[in-house]
Length: 158
Image (cartoon, rainbow, N blue to C red; front, side, top):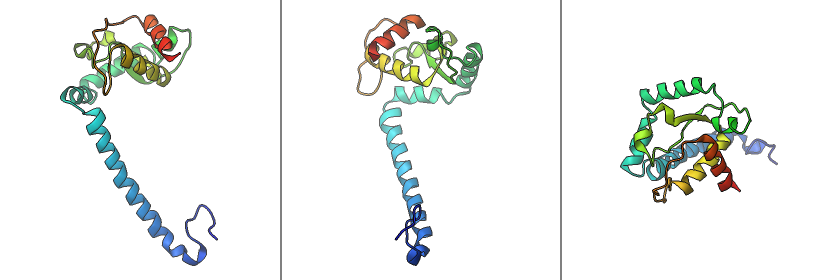
């Protein structure tokens, strides 16, 4: 019998370390494969997406992000307009840079967003602007008012 969390019985326990090492090697090799596939298929699927992703790794973005976090006191702007105080560390573009690349470094286009609102807003942007993989960008008029975005996000969620 095997005593959990071990994988081998007492008689064959000397194989435990070898087994754990092989699992570790397998996990590492498959993680690299997954990351590579995600980066090539989703994140860097074309030159525009590659440039968008690279922007987030610049010093300019790092400084902009910090300015916005401090300006908004690390509080989600989307929750705040609903009267809810939610701490957050993610900075979001009001106008998605996939649809409006010229606004990517505009500090007035940036706000702090929590994880829950970010998920809702991403779904909204996919339907409204046509952002995301396998979608086609629409000619939708940009929405800059956070209250209106929250209403449209919630409407999409329902």
